Length: 135
Image (cartoon, rainbow, N blue to C red; front, side):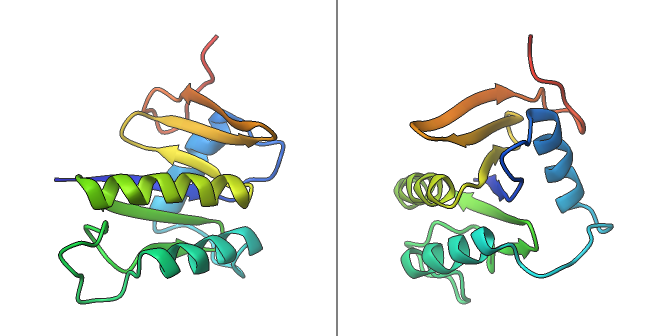
């Protein structure tokens, strides 16, 4: 069993609708490629120090699929359920917040935005391709 998690470089003015749309675009084949966002680059470097994503995967890795899917403005990760996955989720959240990245949970359509005192969210995106912030 596995689950997906994504981090998105969106800037300070992003909203929940934009986070959902960005995730869908990042999953598509039509995604534009560019230089890696500095936050994404730093996030990947630090995350891989903790949890390498090179093959072959060790039994204690959190990754269900490797390598991580990295684009100019995103990292999409498929994690295993269990202790290793739980540890990785905690580290992913810490690193995403530290680098000002949006944390997106596609299973629940929830976007978490970095704020000065921690995470702003979750805000439910309703699992739709383009979603609205709840009233």
